[in-house]
View 1 (cartoon, rainbow, N blue to C red):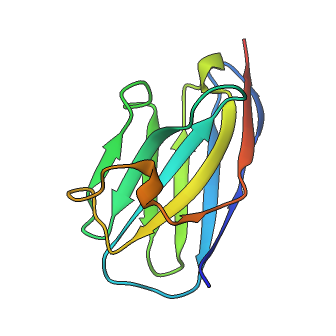
View 2: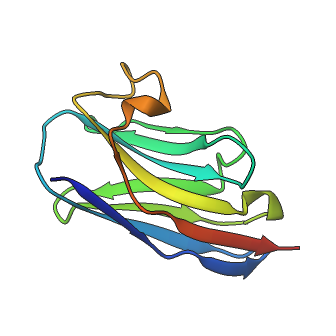
Length: 125
């Protein structure tokens, strides 16, 4: 079974950086989309960044230019490099994967059928 495990969360001051990693195990498919989501207690989950099997990426507007998503397809490690962090970035961050979907066809976060356990990111002002 596919399993996603996130690491790299922690506490940092505003303006600092963190790098989140997501190790993926399980069946490898040719078509997929992977993404990072975040959620604050009491608020709905939001997508942060995505990358699909064609290499296309997409970012939520508030993080574009500050966050970078990348996928090491050989080692099956998804990374989110977060720079110029702001207190508003504080959240639980989740790695997710959607099989047989790409950015061209994915519509909802519910399309992601595999999720990691989450890693907490806290940015102090």
